[in-house]
Amino acid sequence: MLIDGHLDLAFNAALGRDLTLPLADLRRSDPVEGETATVTFAEMQAGGLRVCFGTLFALPKTAESPDGYEDHAGARRQALGQLDQYRRWEDGGHLRLLKTGADVAAHLASEDAPLGVVLLMEGADPVRDVDDLAFWGAAGVRLLGPAWGRTRYAGGTAAPGPLTAAGRELVTAMAEQGIMLDASHLDDASFWDAAELHPRLIATHANSRSFVAGNRHLTDDMARAIAQKDGVIGLVYHSRFLQAGWQDGDVRAPLQSLAAHAAHYADLIGWNRVALGTDLDGGFGQEKCPAGVNTYRDVPGSVDPLPEQVRAGVLGANWARWMTQYL
Image (cartoon, rainbow, N blue to C red; front, side, top):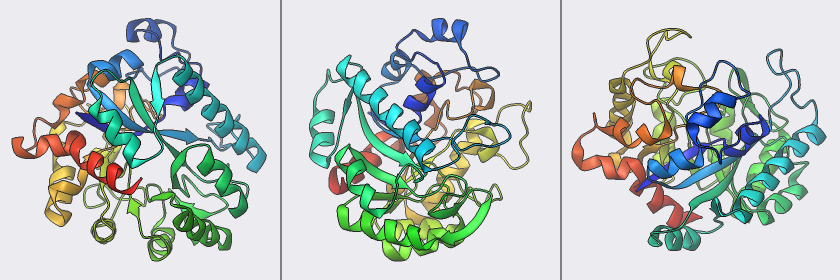
């Protein structure tokens, strides 16, 4: 059983990728340059993926992304378009949207079910204000990460800062409405603010700062704080997040680097809190995956360097336990 804590499926569709194609066909017609695709529905099925957190990810405007959003309305349009994409995939039989722990348990018990997707909003700018949170919850969003870079709600990756006043309101409302908190991308200050306000804290895709510097990664104290809230941490498969000093064009990070992050977390908080959040095709392609991961079907073998007795938990059982208990 494989469960992935982080996949940008609808975002890839918005880039023009047809994930219903065989991977070879997608690669031949891929509109995304410089990032060899690894994820399609067929590849996920071949890898044994049963459930994932599928994102609603609105991309802000930057020098590298001139077509990104500039305000709440633009972020909302992107997220609504991605929500519609997941619904159309569900109508086409490619996936099933899951909203509760009971949904996840029933889905995992069905051997012939399509991919199960739990919606995760990555970056909270599509949420107009605290009163808008109920709309997204009703639409099926079960987890929310307030930051990516800086948002109206929080400091984030490479953008230091605490939760804003609106962010504190949002995280408080999330706790009240049962929407779980994803700490991935939160800056240190915003992480600790959020940890004070929300009883359920996970990191869907975050590696250890003990190996790679920068506020994109978790300190040991952050990992312990997630464990204290009975959370789980998913490992990211980007070579730059696995190996210090890795640069584009370098030889891909070895799977032993992934295993080192996993073992470090396990030493801190236990193997039962270590899982996967591969983020494959989340702004990087095969060229930046760890060595040996060339398509999604290679993910199960990527845990071979781990002790045999913990592999099933890391591949899926740890996320399954958390999802069925808290969603």
